[in-house]
Amino acid sequence: MKYFTPELLARFRSPDDHVSDKAHDDWDRAIDRYQRRLKKISRRLPTSVKRFRRQLCLHDAHIITLAQRGKQFFIVAELEPPSRTIVFLTVELIAKPKINHAPSLEPHALDYVTWMYEEFGLGRKKGCTLEIMLSDGSLMKLQFDAFRFSTGQQILPELNGRGVKRQTVVA
Image (cartoon, rainbow, N blue to C red; front, side, top):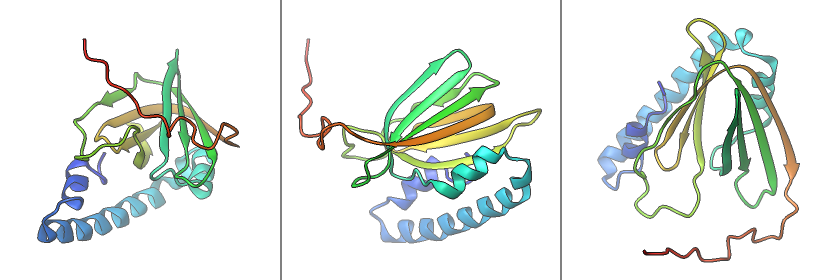
């Protein structure tokens, strides 16, 4: 990611007010730079990406699952509660996905991972890119030539497994 980096996020979350305040300023500048970049490339992005950006914000959405079947990459996410909206993304890959797992940025990580920030861009030779930062510090980069999304309303019970304490089995 070029604008919203794990290092910037770590400084943003710092308990040191001086570090955190500086990171807030840097974060605002990163938003401005990314918005300028998007404006430059917007007309070359697929219509579905532009529609997605207008209609949805996945910041703090719970990642339900990531899956791959051949060249299709699927992301299922639940918008930040109390919303009951589920988002289904399908990306038609033109290159192998790059997923860099990182140690958690959060000292008291929850039982789920959330979508923090995304950056859309243009591939060097063809297609587009989608880079996603997750709350555990993991980064994903997907290079694609088709992007689809849809939404639905969750119909599972309200707790949806969140009321059940997960147990760790030690062998």
